[in-house]
Amino acid sequence: MGARTRAAANNFTTGGVILPAGINDASVASITELENTAPTGGAMTLISEQTASSSSSVSFTSGIDSTYPIYKFDFINIHISNTNQNLRINFSTDGGSNYNVAKTTTFIYTYHKEDGTGGTLGYDTSVDTASSTGDVNIMFGTGNQNDESLSGSLFLYNPSSTTFVKHFMSDIQEVYDNHQGSLRGLCGGYGNTQSSINAIRFTLSAGTLDSGKIKLYGIKDS
Image (tube, one colour):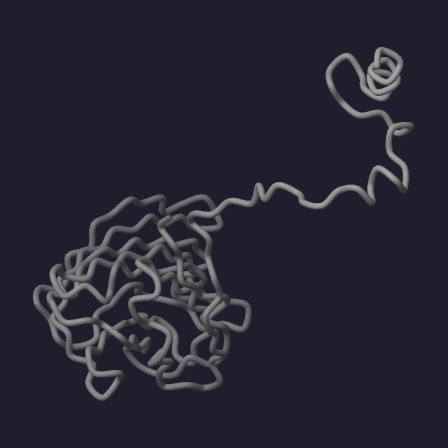
């Protein structure tokens, strides 16, 4: 027994790490199970994605349900046809037949030009909305030059709740209105409905979403 113990001990370092000499075909073949150490909470799953192509709007009418408590939309290099336009959203409780959920929002931004001027932190009351059933702005003033676009994300929380209003918030970065400046906008708000939200639509104040992708993810909270 002592010889076996010493032989086994010779296959490990003093820190308990197995040495290469202790691994062979026989030892590997005897392994019947490996412990699963993968994280189990907070996983993000891609549900669907859409590519804009001279689109007047991009809508997601499926995949938003009680499966996930959090939904994330990623905007990747959204290029628009008309300069100085605003990205807008609206929600639906009937699968996209009507987009008319009342929304209250607020908006702040930071701005800085490429030449080092114009550094600004602001609160823009003109972007705010109060119980609006129409499309509401989550970003403003996007440029349309060939190399200009916007990217960012929007989170929608617990849209299937029949108890609470539906909170959402966005964080978007863009090149601002042909002025060669960086503008980051943060919008927060809620859809004032106790009905389940099951569709969302993205539009512009004018023109089309010429190119770019929007991806929809579901996020587990545990």
